[in-house]
Picture 1: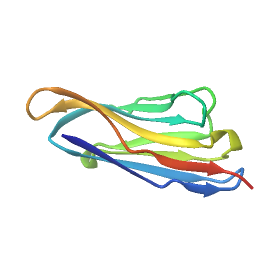
Picture 2: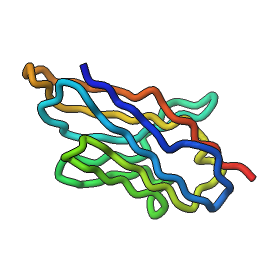
Picture 3: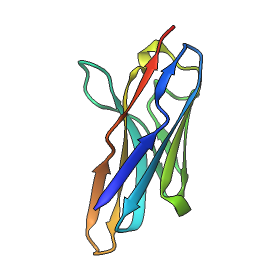
Length: 120
């Protein structure tokens, strides 16, 4: 009932930048929070950053000072600006959203993932 569509991944050299976007659509009444997680090969999925509807951000220590999460509430879209990228940032990045449907039920949804590769 809620679809998340991600875009913006790709190949970038170390020290470069990328901007990820994730748009939520469907029977959404409100979104409490949106965020980004990532999963590298052979590793578990880990939190990268989250942002509440009020704009409060939370970051993994490994990305603090390099990544910035932001949200456009009117568009139900979350962005992740990634600067000073390192090879260890290479992973599939997944968008997540949690909120309430127009039916009154709560939801938690994941996007399909977008590949980010940092390599020279």
